[in-house]
Image (cartoon, rainbow, N blue to C red; front, side, top):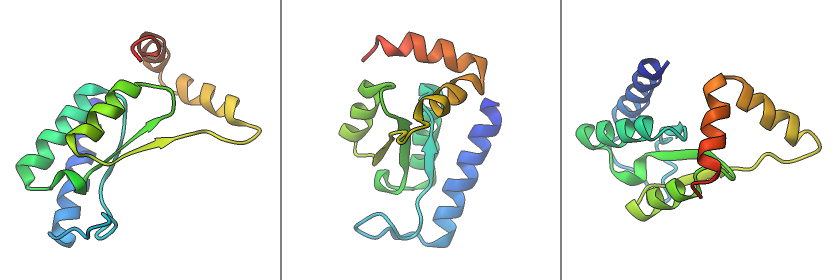
Length: 118
């Protein structure tokens, strides 16, 4: 799963650079790769590959769930990366959140261990 995630990250970054090498001031053009993960190894890979490929920090967005790894979100922002925090909302937020945790058994341990990190 991790190798496939990294491959898709490469494809997103390479495609973004192929579309247009200049990124608008607001970061919307061309559409920038959005890497949705809390996994530090996947984040490190994305940052490293983007740097090697010549994609500026503002050309790569990280997306994370609200309440998980706030410390990592803040660190990425301090480093200059855009970070989007997803907040489940509405009457069915709790079942959605539980379903996301249950999609991959490692998610439950990941959530529990990171809940106390900040």
